[in-house]
Image 1: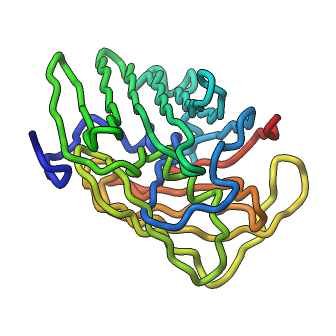
Image 2 (image 1 turned 90 degrees about the horizontal axis):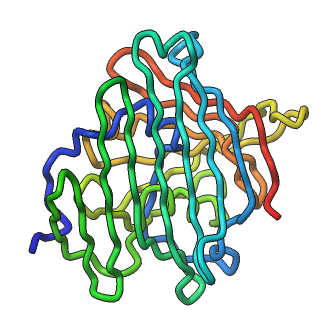
Image 3 (image 1 turned 120 degrees about the horizontal axis):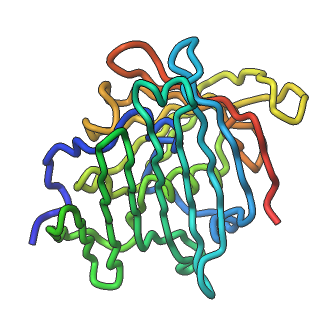
Length: 258
């Protein structure tokens, strides 16, 4: 049995995938009445660029899963041009349940298809036992992780459901990269106006999650997300620093929940 504070490097996750996948996470903020269930039926599409070069696209979907559960799915793919150099077809699937009005992760599965590289990685949240199981290449590791810790996608969803205000900071407990910790998410003092895919310019909060795990991104904490300054907190744009330049995701399509 290992402590959830185990610090082994999680080398498998590529920055490109995590930016597409909205790459963010935060910990221990109080839940709001509307935290659970998440916005079932909502779907987003992003164009993903490396600096000024279009690299591909990603979709984010919130689905019903089982009688009382939910599923968050991200699919990321390179375009035909980048397929010539590095073909990416990646999927992240995060499942969870509503527990006393709070989100509770139950699984986080990463399927990577990148050129000839193939990987299937599973994180199972055994929250009733205060354990997490991580499986890869036929090997299973267990970590002591209290109930209430979230996967990165569930944590991102919780942040969206919180009453965010300029100049505030929230913290959310996550299990990520084989360790548990609090992600600190800061909201900038000022808002910015960006054009949304439905045509109008909208006021956006500037949100900065400060990640502690090295291996999701080359530079810790170098992520910025622009979310609509309304109760939906729709991510309009996100930017991540990598070893060479930035990856930028822009929302190009949106379908409301329902």
